[in-house]
Length: 393
Figure 1 (spheres, helix red, strand yellow):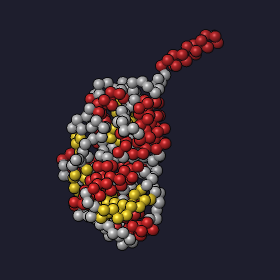
Figure 2 (figure 1 turned 45 degrees about the horizontal axis):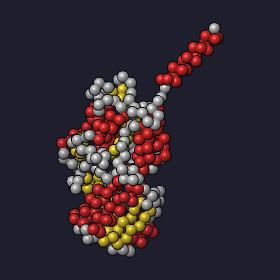
Figure 3 (figure 1 turned 90 degrees about the vertical axis):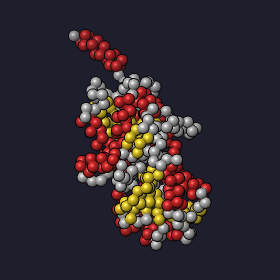
Figure 4 (figure 1 turned 60 degrees about the vertical axis):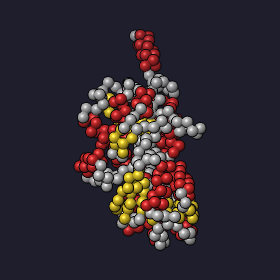
């Protein structure tokens, strides 16, 4: 009896070994779920320093996924979301990317929201042949490797930092008639550094001058000494590339010191926390580039806003809109894929033409970046009061 049982257990282990995980580092990509499910991973900043970005993106994304599943899913299969919180840490994002690709067998991974964390997942995407797509990783180097070659499995649906920097420099020169600018950048992340570089080069190339350029690092809270130093130089606009946590404090402290010049930023400004930190009155003559504005009268935008307000009871922000687009984009790509594998979905993403989204219509370029418009939003007394759409050049 014992001998027969032992033989049975050995045979069972051998069968399990033959049918176990073999995705390893090289196969043809994950198959993404069972007979009636398609697994898609989300790897967002749901806690930590930039949790607003990840949680807001997830809210919009899940709204779209729920609608897709309620309508029957993709080719009769439901989308199953495998959800992880990378805690705003690039190292954690890498660990989670490995887990969802190797263990959960997702067919695609969405996020992270920030450039550094997203870049940290790309080696895993290449290893497991599973595409990673970000809605808001804007750093120019996200879709290329250190040699400048396009990374096969990494994509984004947002514009780049260089386009934002160029746009804000042109806006300062043309719309605000500025001839001098000061820059106060976050030197601790690629996002802000890229923005600062593209703003400076465009502003100077078109006849403007940079009167001061100073830096801070993420996590600082008192910027008065550096702002006082900047104040001693003459400038028409102050460009602050960085995220809302520090930017909100910088705006508030700049106004306290009597700096009344227009303050410019990029999509990192887009958070209610910015106004909370600065104070409503301080957030006047503030302009920032963004992916979307609730002030847009486009029918696609209006329909999204109406549906979002009905579901959530508040107006959606740009990250809600980007998340919504990201979900619909990946669903569209899965529906066009030749088979349910990561490799096939990657090919469908690369072949995208004329996708229509809330944040704009686009085709996927050979560099894995979309060609789309940017919106410059004006804020007065803590409220968005106007939006100017700038087409891609």
